[in-house]
Image: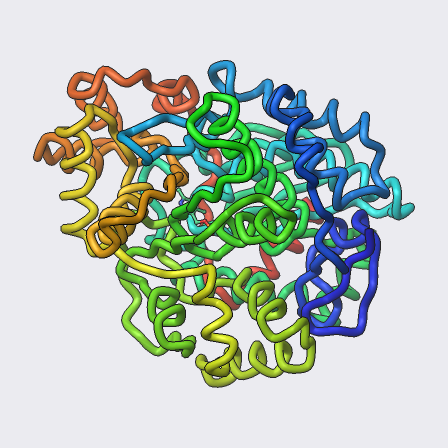
Amino acid sequence: MKFISTRGGETVTGAQAIVKGLSANGGLFVPETFPQVSAEEMGEMLYMSYPERAAKVLYKFLDDYDEKGLLSACEAAYAKFEGSDPAPLVKIKEGVYVLELFHGPTCAFKDMALTVLPYLLRKGCDLCGVKEQILVLVATSGDTGKAALEGFKDADGVKIMVFYPDDGVSSMQKLQMCTQEGGNVNVVAVKGNFDDCQTAVKNIFNSNEYAKILKDKNTLLSSANSINFGRLAPQIAYYFSAYLDLVSSEQIEQGQEIDFCVPTGNFGNILAAYYAKRMGLPVRRLHCASNMNNVLTDFLANGKYDVHREFYKTMSPSMDILVSSNLERLLFEISGRNSDITAERMAKLKEEGVYEITAEERAAISEVFDGGFADEDAVVETVYDLFCDTGYTMDTHTGCAMKVVNDWAHKNKKDTTPMVVVSTASPYKFPQDVLYAVTGNDVRDSFKGIKRLHAATAMAVPKSLATLRDKPVRFKTSVAKEKMFEEVVKFING
Ligand SMILES: *Cc1c(COP(=O)(O)O)cnc(C)c1O
């Protein structure tokens, strides 16, 4: 399978798409066609383990890799998860299920892909004959950074550097990153918000001047952000797996359509659901859930993407994003794979902070997608209500999605399509906010939050968070966004 850029001009292999991360003209790599999964194949996958299902989906796109290698990589990756199932589906009430994607090493859904990406990248370098040292650069709104650090720590021939917005991540997320172990890692805070961080990292990737400096140092940049196809591909797998679990537990018939609701920031997770649908998975609608930074809700409602708005810091910090990078891949599809129009829109977004799609495109998007959001009070209410009604505790990001599902159900009372709510983080990753939602208790200290949340819910505390308190803080640097490249050079030299 070949990959093309959303902005045209480049055709590459799967390995090249993953090693490069971003195409030379700033576009995102997308598969030339969507590989199909037939009903027969679905039938075979019913009896497979999660790693087997994941390897099967990966190989559909990455046929330049070998299938056995992909399978052992998936087996090794998902062995790092707590419990026997890396992506369990929990029935909440009639027709509503939660897909828990937070049982990995860092307790957020990013682990689903970032435990596999190091293999895809390393093997990709071999396939491409890359001899340089790889520097993985990451801009994070909190969860990607930690998951990437865990995934890449002490990997051969790879260094990893993470930038996060100084005041834009939760205290638990910050502590997780700043205590990171490994000889090849670096973590730097940036004064600004996530969009500043992400834009600055993109600029480092796109600069010819920087590329030359790095080349002299025998270093090649790579990305672990969700724009990398190596992030997207493993995410497609859990949509298949969730569907298969519904079939094998006889909740649905094979072929029956279901909906997914996804807490969304950079549009990577929900885009993976869309790709699964395009591959033949029986998905009816995709519900895109935002927090108060509801730029996507507005875009899905009126076809205008406009970043000129207030930026809110919310209890769901991993969704505090105004520029959703992966939306470019949907725009590309919806424009009839028109790379000129896509490039134009992305240029407009960069220069003016706004672009609009046509009425026909809007109609095409709303055939599949709708959007909704939850303000801070609604998140607290929703987490509280579900806990009271069912005893199930969700984190604040999942709370946004559940609110959107409740609103949908309220407006579509006769709709009986099964709904899978994608849960992206462990409640213990945001213990103070979840504790407040569940009990009204307000504590300052994260670990006190964990203790009391455990007392209130009796839910098991993930090991990686329980042991965090005793780890030494290794990274304390904080820089202006203009100084980020200097830090990169220091790290390579050091
Ligand atoms: C990253 C993240 C999201 C947003 O996912 P996207 O793929 O960026 O849309 C939502 N919730 C949590 C907990 C996350 O870590």
